[in-house]
Figure 1: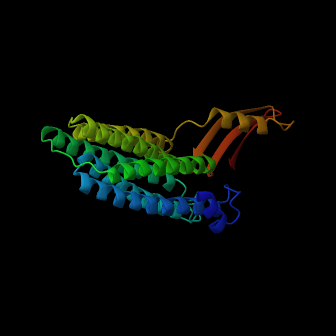
Figure 2: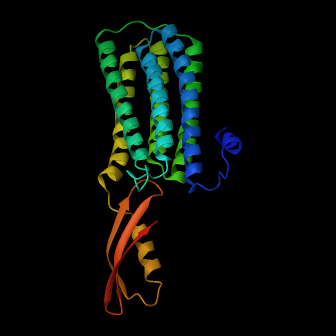
Figure 3: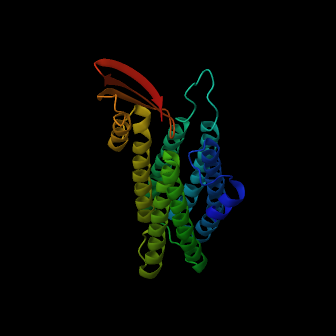
Length: 280
């Protein structure tokens, strides 16, 4: 689906280095994420109402928060695609990192809420109503979330987007969480054990872990992480390819967002030391 939509709505889609293409991919992924998550919320909320399951209902609201996260991603890509201005001469690319961090915070908050609701359910268990439609909705949800994780990861790697990678991690954790809910629902029905609260607790813990991992990956570039050794080696190789240059020193790399890297260095040239800033 995402490939077909990109062919229809994105011009020059094979050139991810183009800021306009990058922005279009981010908006497309965000819009599709909003649509799919709202559908999943409606289906799971119906399933939770039928079965009176706190785990299923909590999973539904987890998808609702994912729709909100997709809105954040969409807005973030729109803002990051703005042209440089006098107040922001290096562009607005770091907004993508901030967007990924906001998505991570939303994941963590939802995980804590799921844990709280599940603890209450464990302390005060209630009998569940089993229905085949609940199983079907949960199974379809797992497949949809796996697909969302796949296309967000693929495009996130192609664009080197921390926001889309965080969304992919969230989608993958959601599919695993829903699988736990489905397993708890089936076990409760066939064994008579009250596993609904335990299932919700596992979902909450899994979601919190996913949020922590996503936050870790987005905070590092905001704080100013060390450049990739392969990138540093590439810079050295390019600079030293000129015969008149004898050496390079004091390489400094500034990351202003994906595709917006400014670096400077000093060179030794026949006994003369010079510095040069360059954009990459």
